[in-house]
Amino acid sequence: MNSAGHPEATARRGLELTPFRGLRYDPDRVGSLAAVTSPPYDVVVRPDGLLHLESADPHNIVRLILPQAATPDARNEQAARTLHRWTAEGVLTTDPEPGLYVYEQRDGEDLLQRGVIGAVRVSDPAEQVVLPHEDVMPHVVADRAALMRATRANLEPLLLTYRGDGGTPFTTALVERTAAQPPLLSTTTEDGFCHRLWSVTDPDTVARVRTELSHHQALIADGHHRWATYRTLRAEHPSPGPWDHGLVLLVDTARYPLRVRAIHRLLHDVPVHDALAALAGHFRVRRLESPLDESLNALAKAADAGNAFLLAGDGAFHLVDRPDPGLLARTVPTGRPEAWRTLDATVLHATLLAHVWHVPDDSAAHISYIHDTAATVEKAERDGGTAVLMHPVREEVVRELARQGVTMPRKSTSFGPKPASGLVLRALDA
Image 1 (cartoon, rainbow, N blue to C red):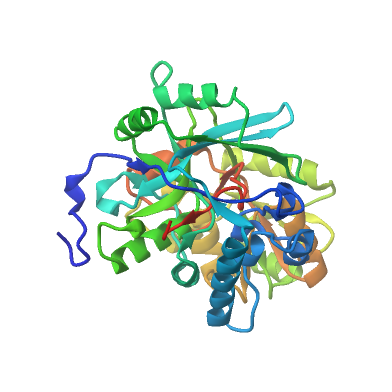
Image 2: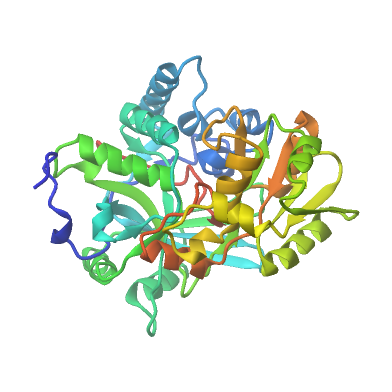
């Protein structure tokens, strides 16, 4: 046993998914379910994002996941008081039986994703059960941990993927059978996604799902900081107990492949002119006389041949590619797999940010990480900074690096669609 009373890493096999009593909005107590949901806390990117969500409904989940107050302690205390008040008033109610939840997201006819929401055992890295693929920022983990301590709740699920290959696995078949039944809730959010949720409470069915998943490992698709938070909090509390588990959505990507998108960077204090000037002699730079969509196509073509980036913020797009091999040899760390050393994110952080632009990559005062491409460009143009647009990494590269235990630079990928926050919460005292 370790110092916190947790079994050693070799004692377990694979994923352990546990049913829980979900904490959900009472639809009769809110304006609409769509009005109380939010994107995950780190995807609220538009300039008026918080205000827009807060004004959508006085009970919007953003008041819990991104509370607003003068100090971090005050924010967390406010979130805890808000959660307590909403449960006392019946705005949020606990489901009567523990269960797993089938969750569906549909975007018209183009995209359908289904998975299972449950509480997964928080495993140690050595177990290779839940595989991270990105580094995390300690201050973000500390912030999320303080919020979870204060609220004693998992407020939003992180997104895990696994490969249910070989015929039709029981869990995937159950998901599809369940989706043919009337849902617990159904709502369409303003981004056009329809969300539906079902509960699965039959003990035998839950047991079969748990047995099947115990033979699988999972990749963190979205939520590295929340997973690191789960691990931090698990180490602080005695076991067994509710902190041994964390809220997740598990998606079988053999049946429902995720979209992989890039996460872009916004350099606050570097005007485009200065960023371009610093690249002289290090990269090829070409000004593109084309709109965003066509410029992104040019980025994709250039990325097929090597490292490439698209800079914006001065009303134009600038394609940056063909880095000087000598510069890469001097700046990219050795001792890692070639697939890691040649990642765009590796070259961006190790070469461009650290050695060419001299921008700290872990300070919100200097750099922002934004999922939405157009929003990144618009904010750079408005604030006088530089948008660094990235091309997405293929999922198979991410998964293979994760299997090797190699983490990518922070915020390297954006898997989606991401689960909406606010449809089901997990209270640790339930």
